[in-house]
Image: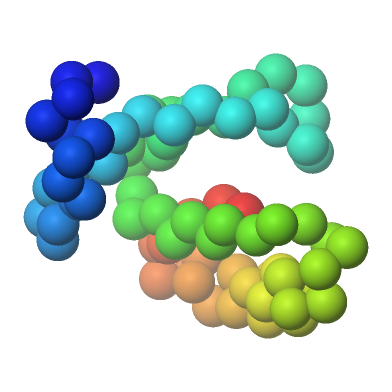
Length: 77
């Protein structure tokens, strides 16, 4: 990533950088590029289940997941 892209935050319509993280529900890694061009993606960034606020938001996201999937939106937390 170039310095100029780090100096300015992403704006609506900009392409998100590929983020690669360890998967917790399976072996291996999950990359943003795995979803690119396949479907809209809702990404939830949470500190962890030790955080009471994050725990509430994870539960809320889990409840929304079936309705979002029905509309073709993938969820990733």
